Image 1 (tube, rainbow, N blue to C red):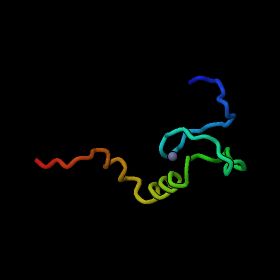
Image 2: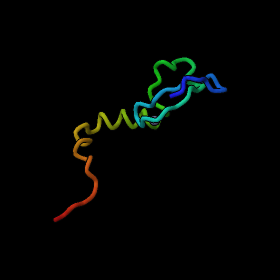
Image 3: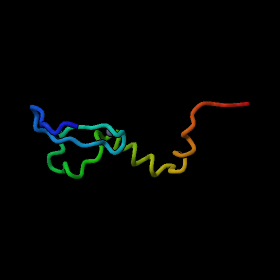
Image 4: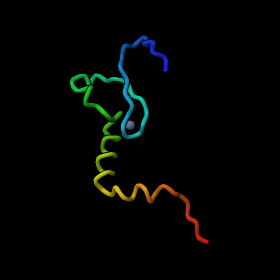
Length: 68
Ligand SMILES: [Zn+2]
């Protein structure tokens, strides 16, 4: 990754939910250090997903109905 700063001096982070980089936003100005997700959608997905069924994640890694 190049360390050069773009025209905008905005810092970026990696979303903990979708794994995509996102740039600083004005609404996060107050607690940018605490921001971990790119959007409320991702934050909600992590929250509900983790609390709903943590076990389901591993068993759902193989998509595709295979009936022999
Ligand atoms: Zn995200």
